Length: 546
Ligand code: ADP
Image 1 (cartoon, rainbow, N blue to C red):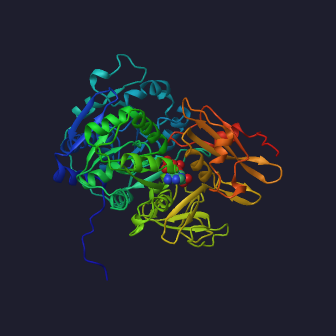
Image 2 (spheres, rainbow, N blue to C red):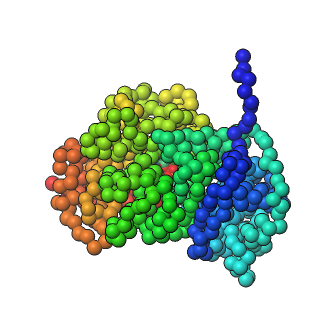
Image 3 (cartoon, rainbow, N blue to C red):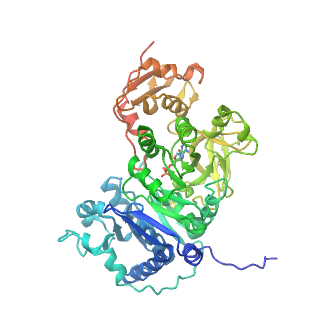
């Protein structure tokens, strides 16, 4: 017997319709590429998204075709999120920090029909326009006044002209909720990037999950500023979750330095933010150097790579900002776990709480996870045993875009599990802790050493800005940890001082065999340390023999 409830498809357009009807006056504030601040309401967003849907039709973009964006976080990008997906067009957000060759490859792979781009990327598009195989129109996301006089881009269209010429009369179509809505490529640290094609259903379910109290805990009273870019897994879903709950949205545009972010947080009364640890480092440095405090921000999600405990301590201890350590992947829309304490844990000692908070957290309902050994046998949740982390759920990918042949689902562990490539422990309370990525783990004499643990400890030293731990070849142990340390500007620290940090905190055989001071650590397009590059640089490194 079937249930007798309405079978209303979960569509992205319904978020916009809801937000306009129930929160029409709610504000969206954007720092524009031009430098000024732009403000309008959800009502204005809805009107312009409808115009965009009509405009795409006029450009000849059909149902399920892809349109690309190269854009910062801002209101025009949001209009495309809703105007394109709402009409059944697939929004493909490209990461402008990738190499131009990779961008062209990705746009070709996705068969993008139109490329929308911010003023910042005009030179990039001018240099590459002739190389895109499928792009028929280029649209500069700017006012008429900002349009270049003569551009090398054939038929360059002005975004504002495009909208002005389109009607705002549009009825959002109804279709199957499993229809594709947006496309995002993984950063491609190994081989060519792979496309992850989200659906309307997966996006809406992810938005529900991310808004839950023990996830991001979003409400209409929140002021949400996603620092994480809209080209990085849909800004972790915040543009959808904010409309779902009716929160004010604030977009930082291209200004992601500590001062610009802090000023915007304060001016707009931001309560909630989200970003990768490397961005928060800049913000914390600014706040610290200038003796500032946050007057409205009360919590932030930090994820994308391990959040150093020293950062959690600084946010929570000095500034009263709760850190929600989160873990996820492009393939997971991206949220998988968030670290929120369970009942009674908030009465534990500060040290004991910190031991929990440095973990990546508990699975959100909708994400099922387990750890397995090399044969796929499930491992115990004892907080000690580590194994490869597998996940499944309605917002986790089934197969990569255009790669039906990619072996994906882990058949060691039975059907339907996605192998994350992360190594983790899970404790009896269900708190998961990433110890490494399978390709970053250091295998010393057959035993695993967690590079993340060693980095976190080194980054706790007040003179250390960043630390990366990689495996260096060792004649006896095969691999041993080599620690690369980038000191904070103007600070100095010695090898012995760094090694002393590990005393009593890790087994003696985990101690890095050597410490090398470096001027910089390469970061990838999403702000993560590029350990593959470091491994290449230090490939022939000879560890001290004593
Ligand atoms: P992104 O989602 O950042 O674009 P990927 O999907 O390429 O990038 O990266 C996902 C990977 O990032 C995870 O598999 C994991 O290795 C790492 N990661 C994400 N969040 C965390 C975290 N909080 N701690 C440790 N590693 C993390």
